[in-house]
Image 1 (cartoon, rainbow over the protein chains, first blue to last red):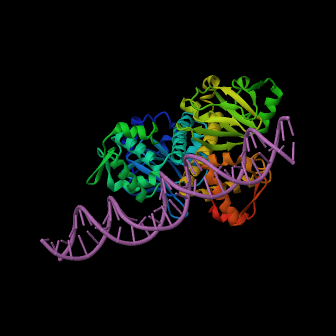
Image 2 (image 1 turned 180 degrees about the horizontal axis):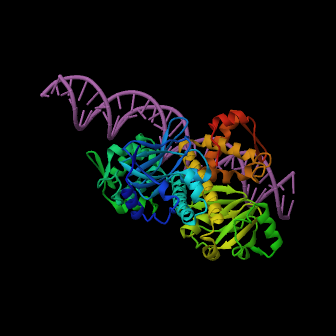
Image 3 (image 1 turned 135 degrees about the vertical axis):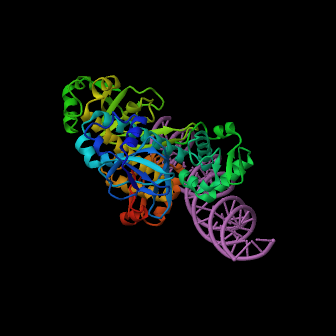
Length: 232
Length: 232
DNA sequence: TTTGGGAAAGGACAAATGTCCCTAAACAAT
DNA sequence: ATTGTTTAGGGACATTTGTCCTTTCCCAAA
């Protein structure tokens, strides 16, 4: 983690994401800009929470580790998103571990200042509400989706969502097989089983395995298989 | 659904749940009190949302139905809780179906008035934030819990949570076997498999099956099995 | 080119879970 | 009590998923 003392840059980010109206005059001086290297942890499950982070550049992954040591990836996130919002409102320790997947830039505000200057400031509260309800909605969908559908359907859905979004670094025109372990943890299955299911989909001709890469062959059939459900 | 034109009663509920400060002077006249019979639907997945409901009495269940007709119970809720909050903030249709499990009383406010008088009112926004982050946290836990643990662990956890909470109507000192189908849908498995796992736990002596009722024999072992995870 | 190391894929088997259907218990009506 | 009907529970089998370990492939270092 590196603090960037670049007020200009910070202002450009505020501008770009229309955040000017979210933070009032008293809060603005307490915003700071941090950068994280690829692979660096932004915060860790169970630690006390200190800052609200606004993801303005790069890509992060949110995951949890169970007592038995299994890892479950809850989501990948790209701007604009918040980290530490739920912890702030509820006054609890960090729920999930957050890791930079690419070089990442975040705007950070210490809870101290949010409490002091933000609890009655409606635009900020509205902003938090919007971001959190969005996250809730996504999580609600993925909960039922995961419980209601087998891995094959979840993978189909994931492939669709990922091969649409060009900004996804897991996707360079296709899905890199190097990221398959992450994908397994994301859809909540084992790497072994994921491979098995990929094999089945290849057999049906829906996808294809080229060296180092998986590419979608038949988006229509895949979409049919995913039964109109989009992964997160 | 029946509207109760009982201003006194409404005030008592507001008092009891400390809601007086949440709704300002302009909003108060637009609050109304509704009652729902056991088994009645409060709102249905996919319909346009109109009201924010505050559950002040009784018990409801939230469930979703997949395209293939499978039902997944997302949660049971008792006061104090909100229905329609996420839909209000996001401006979307009803996400899940809500059904009264017991006779239920709700305070309702039409979105129209919330929009008109509530968008800048910090106490209301804070209240919404607190309720929604709580729901988010619960859902986040249950998502990972479900994906990371087999049915046996989920059942153990459920039994613990339910046999602690005396206010739970599913629980009269024990778990009524008549509710097993609901339990299966809640922990995301089939009724058949749930029975199988109950059998296993009986075999291990952790629980016992009396006529019409399942009772917890060994809370300690059950808790160990649930690996310190509490269901919802 | 050879060789060693590591990552990716897959084989074999076990465990978890789903589906279908049957049995047995409970209960109501006569 | 007898019969019919409903519902809870379970048997049998298929499918899905997990675990462990082996094989294959790729690439770097010599």
